[in-house]
Length: 243
Ligand SMILES: Nc1ncnc2c1ncn2[C@@H]1O[C@H](COP(=O)(O)OP(=O)(O)O)[C@@H](O)[C@H]1O
Ligand SMILES: [Mg+2]
Image (cartoon, rainbow, N blue to C red; front, side):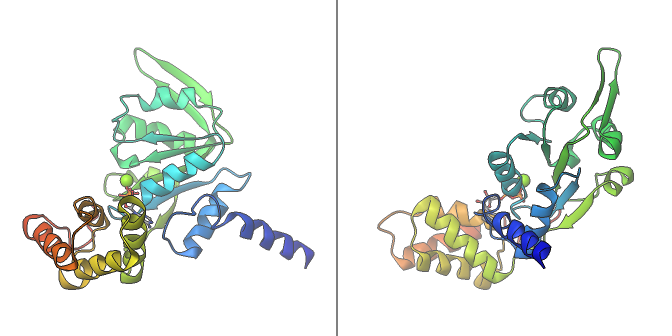
């Protein structure tokens, strides 16, 4: 009993609270995430979901709020080599590898051992790296499993973030449009409603594109017109694509 109580308190205190506070997401998914983060064990988690399902948001919040967690952008836009970066962060409590499918083949291969045992061995004619990251947890993200090799996939617990429901889409609209563009909740709800129900657009990013173009003195019909124009000329992913 006492133990159960302790466990409950522990998870209640950390689950939805700090780390994933600003993210609209199923509570039970938050629970797995909390268990993946708040443990002494070396967990390896792969977040799989379509574009705009808050994978990067999740991952960057973790790095912002957790001590000694670091973020690597797999698209390589930081200009840093992944191996050099790992070497520099070898004391990390955890690393995020955003868009892991964009890593080069040899970088992906290097991860096999790392995920298995924490050992990193990487050798080219120019560099030699041999080091261990025994305690390091990993959160990786990807839109698709297609570009990940079998051995890489098999080393992760893969969590599939489902596409948003209409209720979630509305909640996200209220949050994004309210926080970023000061729109009233009713206006945000109306925009979400036209996009989803009339135009069959389920793209969270579209909410932001529209919010950014709204002026203070816009009336309801102006906003409706804008939404329609954005759809008319925009290219919409009406279905979540796993590209
Ligand atoms: N569940 C959510 N809660 C709050 N904001 C969200 C959510 N999903 C998406 N967003 C918004 O959409 C943007 C894009 O999300 P992002 O994390 O980049 O998606 P992904 O990496 O899965 O493609 C975020 O910056 C955020 O503003
Ligand atoms: Mg992303």
